[in-house]
Image (cartoon, rainbow, N blue to C red; front, side, top):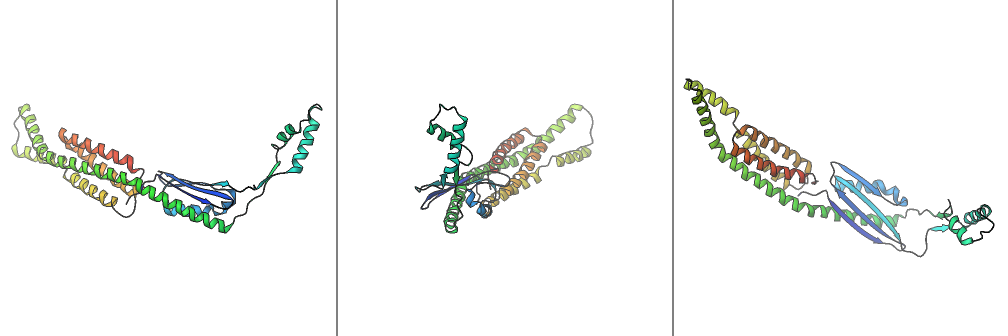
Amino acid sequence: MIQSMTGYGKSVLQLPTKKVTIEIKSLNSKNLDINTRIPSYYKEKELDVRKKIAKSLIRGKVDFSIFIEMTADKTSTTINKGVVNDYMQQLKNVLSNNTEDDLALLKMAVTMPDALKTEREELDEEEWAQINNKIDEAIVEIVQYRIDEAKSLEEDFKERIANIKTYLEEVKTLDKDRINHVKKRLQKAIEELKVETDANRFEQELIYYLEKLDINEEKVRLENHLEYFLTTLDSEDSNGKKLGFIIQEMGREINTTGSKANYAPIQKAVIQMKNELEQIKEQILNVL
């Protein structure tokens, strides 16, 4: 069962004094690239979070965020009264004696450094245990999203593989006509030269030439690659890289068939196979 690397997961935890929202987003990437946004008082748990994400998501560009919304009446940020009063007094000394608007001075003072002080929250292990459970829920949700997203990809892959098989059968049928076509073309070229040829020697050269144009091995290998792709697609593990390697091998056999065919009807079928394969290549980049 394949998975897409595109996914989204979210969970929300309501605590007595705050609302915690956890979001995980992922896009396709060659490797695992995790970016985190975590409040400073949870930072010591970041490494554990990264390990948890890496174990479940394996590959992709992942953005992990924890958002905190305070819901309690009391805030951890307070005005540093002594500092603000000192700033106001200094401002009065600097400004004109005609300016005695304390409200204006207060607005200026609270923007100064250290005018506000925030009490640093310490990590509450019981609180983190609840958050950790919600992280697990978000991961489960994004994994399911990836699985659902991959279903349409899987259907598309199977349809295009079936199309390539159809064109391959067409190539097999046309190959018989191609051999006769090549023989007649060579015979006609000899006749136009109006020279006498040794029949046995001509037959030997013809066999040598046809062996160089033989595409039976390419047809067999391509057929095997197509079956191997479908088998890998239906396996329990999602392995986009492996599927990508199989596609490369399929491309080689299709290209070689086209270059050796030397027969327009077969080359038309090869172009159709290339088109189907190119569509698979674009989509396989998003498979885990």
